[in-house]
Image (cartoon, rainbow, N blue to C red; front, side):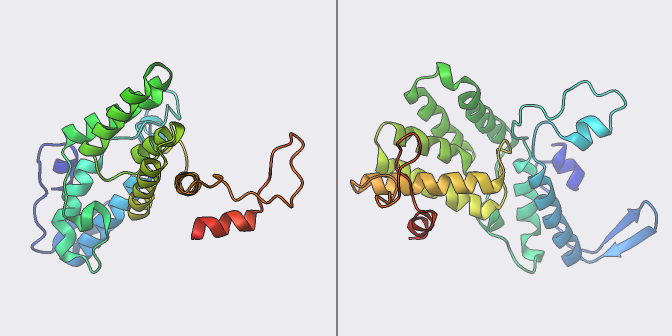
Length: 245
């Protein structure tokens, strides 16, 4: 069942073949069709995905008589895609519309691979100052190989490539990041919102693409007086137009 997959007593979810009788806390038993069960489980995946952090307020604080950890924690991503991919694959044939997540609900990730991928990514986040650029790249590339569903490791790689003038590689990583984030429609690293990650990455993609063509990284408007610090400014309409192209 669902709970057995979450707590890892079962690796794969049982297929939905017949209607399910559930026990409601207030309204007694209720029979649900296979299709309704599948749709509710997909909504559950989306709900958990939006709350997927190691420190969760309702679980680690509000439900504890004497919480022993400080909210909101450090924002480290939780490990939960292993059960989401398994449940999504199991219910896909019963969904009215199969979403594009997890390669249209066909691919799985193990708990072990997800945990290692998360920890490799987090090592770069926490120890950036003490890791060489090549060490950071290697850790992020291994993280991506283990967990191909999330965009944030690509965003980090795009920044590293941009830093050393590898603009074509940086653009490719930024484009991959956006593709994966649009599919998941939620931030995996919740230190920033989904909108913030996407906005940052769109600008990063533009900068890499322009630099790869030998252009200034921003479409500067020479007709606009510079800032008080003497820096050139950009017309926001020009910036948005450039990002749409």
